[in-house]
Length: 170
Image 1 (cartoon, one colour):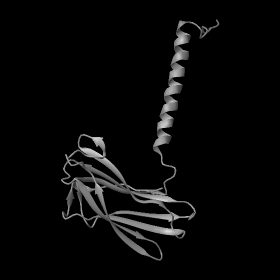
Image 2: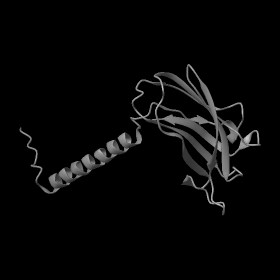
Image 3: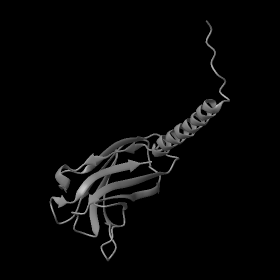
Image 4: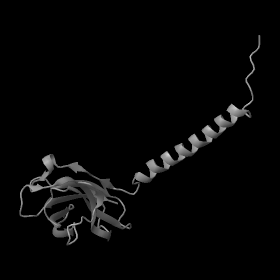
C-alpha cells in the first residue's frame, strides 16, 4: 500500500503557503524589533532600581568604562525613571567624572514637568522615563579607564518617587 500526499496547490495547500508567508513576515519583524532595541554603540549602559522608590544621597548611579579611541566623540547620558509620587518639576544632580589624572564635579538641573504639572518624559499612567545628556560630542583626552557617579542633589533625603537611575555612554 502506498500513501500519496496531496499537492500543496489545493485548498489546504494555499492556506499552508499563506500561513508560512505570514509566519516569515512576523519572524522578520520580531528580529527587527530585537536588533533595533539593542544599542550596539554603547560603551556602557547601566540601570539600577531604587529601593522603595527612595533615592538617597549615599546611593549614586555609577559606571566604569574604558575609552579605547580618543578620535571618536562620545555622548554621556543620565537615565531616570520616576513615578507620580515625585513632587517636583525639576531635579538637581551632581555628576563626578574621574580618570587616572583628574576629577571633575558638575551640578546639573533637569526639567521634568511643564508649569501645568504635565510630565515631559516618555510614559503614561504613573511611570515616566527620561534621558538627559551630560556630555554631547565629547572627546576624551586619553585612552583608559573612566568612572562616573551621579548623586541626587535635592533638599529631600531620601528623594521620593525615583524608580530607576542609570548611565549610558555611547
